[in-house]
Image (cartoon, rainbow, N blue to C red):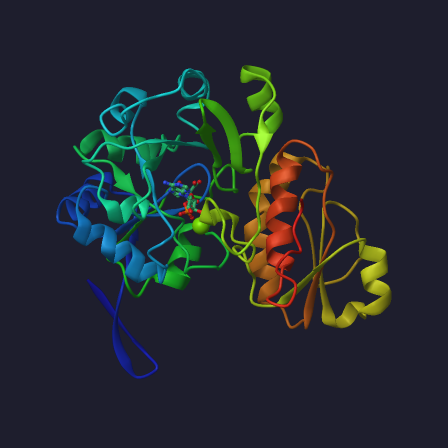
Length: 336
Ligand code: TXA
Ligand code: MG
């Protein structure tokens, strides 16, 4: 373990490395470890060990009513933890796993209450990142993992993001480089066998509909959400974020004290980020959380952001922007 002096205190720091065997060793001991996935970094622990799961909630400062996703290496392993897989869930898993899709399925008793916050369904996902695939293959338990950020803050898409927020509290960060998708997984549940999207994410609604037909969207933003990823203020940067047509926002906020986030409009400001100069939504998704962090760190009073085209990954990007823009006074500043 490394040590550093910070604020005159001796604090331990996470080691950052790419040793899958070291991550596996710590996880077998019941420790929590940050892991890379194709979407965002996760804060992982043995999903069958309540002490490890409790530690995840503690490090993340997450309320225990907000359940965790379990990560498995493949569909056949998922079957050890659920009692039933609806036909459309099976199709989705066969098509999109490993990949950025989470399925809510009825859990077996072996999954602790703490993982699901007492709900009957467990969220299951098979991540596509090669290091985490190797890690899961070494382990004989699934990994419970929320995004590796403090509760309510921006999800991490690089090892150093995890280190900034959680580095003092965890022993190891498995560094798999920048996350290629950059947005969390799409979450799908089933009501009477019929699929419902609860969170837009790395797999687009269009891709899903192409496979299984029309699908309902329930992206609630109420204070009593069905799936707590729907909490409105879930992706909050530390600075006030205003969402709208950028020229209008700029007419009210001088450019020298405002951060600007656009898809590819250029305002020649040092406090600006363009999500993708070529207007590519995949690249925009990859950059979104990194750029929100960078804008948050700039000497600006406010971040002005413009929604992107509302199709494909753009819908998930806009969803995150809306949540980042939501305030306690206006919690319903949401898409629906
Ligand atoms: O891409 C992802 O999904 C990332 C990576 C690390 O896998 N994970 C992630 O986890 O985004 P988290 O905890 O930040 O978001 C998971 C969302 C939460 O909003 C949680 O409320 C919801 O999934 N969820 C988890 N289990 C659930 C369940 N049994 N029923 C309903 N919602 C559930
Ligand atoms: Mg999260």
